[in-house]
Image 1 (tube, one colour):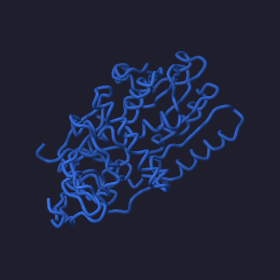
Image 2 (spheres, one colour):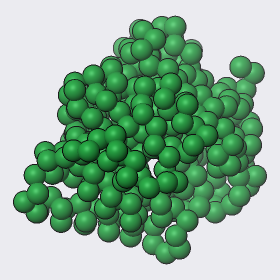
Image 3 (cartoon, helix red, strand yellow):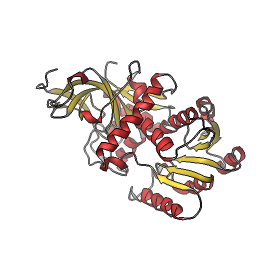
Length: 347
């Protein structure tokens, strides 16, 4: 494609705090890629917990309405701007976007694109973008889990949780995973020992790991974070990365996160031989070059494992982009297991 051409993009717009059916389908002319940019034809974009919270106006770093949702994407480069290698055209890539992914085409900085290995289905690859980066960095960069250790993964059948389970098993760790009773076999198939989250989690985990666990990965927050910390063995690490327990609470959406971070900092100040960390995928962006380098390195590692068949994508449902309202409603209904993915219309 000529770099002087414009492109008409179909976009899904979230106009405000509306129900899923309130999403708008619009069209917008995108200019030719500018300096350092690439035009990407989007083949798959995820429907994650972040978009669900953004719809409610409760995401921690809430974008101003109206905006195009879409936290991550996989697509093919169709054109590049000046100072971008021409050979990038035709390459399938992945990108972490936070917003903007629910579109047929997007303009992105070429430096933010990560090549997707040949042979990976776009929807399968999409499930490993934000989920894969999150799981890999928490497991390897923060908790530094080693072979022979035991870890506890809350929500082991979820998007991040199922990826964490698989990566931890590949690292040689024993995994205990919380989930509902109906998902116990699915969690077991991933390689974890299931624990019913509706029961006494502490008693169940203690029965499996009497001395405690070496790491806990907790997206729930709320009062249960105390139990997560208490289940750590000496030298263990608690990694919190969400506050799902308070998702429907009224009031300031930032307060639960701030309270959780404060509690973690307090625990770190105690002489208890256990570490805590709040994981935010965007925390390192102030040092942009390092952020991009680590993101590309970590996502490439995850996608390579998927391409070799060592990771299994958990796709719950696929919807055409133009049916984003139905896709969001399905994701929020919890009626499917696995990630809901938007794919290009006609695929």
